[in-house]
Amino acid sequence: MKKKSKISFSLEVFPAKTKQAQIRFWQSISELKTLSPAYFSVTSSGESQANGSTKELTLKIKRNTNIEAVAHIVSINQTVNSLRELARDYYASGIKRVVALRGDLENGDFSGQEIKDAAQVVKILKQEGDFDISVAGYPEKHPKATSLAADIENLKMKVDQGANRVITQFFFDPDVFLRFRDKAYLAGIRVEIVPGLLPILNFDKLLIFARRCQANVPNFLHEMFADMSHQSLHHNLLAMNVLSHQVTRLIDNGVNHFHFYTLNSTSLTFQICRWINIAF
Ligand code: FAD
Image: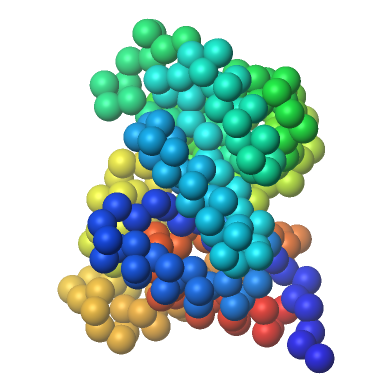
């Protein structure tokens, strides 16, 4: 009989836009489901939430895979009333696990928004149903936060409103996560903090992404991936090494659930999760 791993993981995906991307998406899902993830989570843009594609996809993944699927709910461009309606609609459709987020506006100006932060989103969701709610945490602080301490205070407000767990922004140095977890604990946050890990599928693209999120990319990674095409086998092997180092260090420090940003690709996520299932 197959040993049940003590370590679980969830896999984040996003709604694919083109026909071709959708075909690839379902191929990835059918491979990834064989790893028995705890759940798939489906991101939302304001657009995919408004046109129903996040909801539709979440329900379809659940139906097609028999694996739990979790929808991200973002509050940008929602009023309190429209968010209440959305929450009731999700709950009635059977989506009772969500990730509650504020989301981003291109101009960064939230003054015209009725809902200004994710703590308010959590509060509204909890009033509308017995949702299981995850919220976002930032081990290296949110780019707009004045300090890590202020950001952790903001995180505490989300937890105080009833969030059940925190999923973090990606990071590369496991010690950054461990220090953040300690600080959150000292600030009175007692829910599980799940590390969000981003497989390095393409180091050059990752640098752009990391700059936007202000996630530090340690020097050793720059050295490791210098002048290396993301299509080379070495790139893939090195990236797997980085991931397995992160996972091992975190498991050694009590982490038993990981959240992987799959970028809708099976590459690396499949390898690391298969390894987790067998090794732990
Ligand atoms: P909040 O917790 O409200 O706060 C964000 C920052 O603003 C914090 O630094 C906080 O300290 C500060 N802040 C909040 N309120 C105040 C205030 N009143 N005064 C001063 N500062 C304040 N984005 C999407 O669009 N779709 C997704 O599906 C999505 N999924 C995500 C999943 C995860 C796990 C993570 C980590 C992020 C995700 N994001 C997503 C990105 C997220 O929407 C952005 O990072 C956004 O800028 C902040 O959202 P939040 O929910 O963390 O907001």
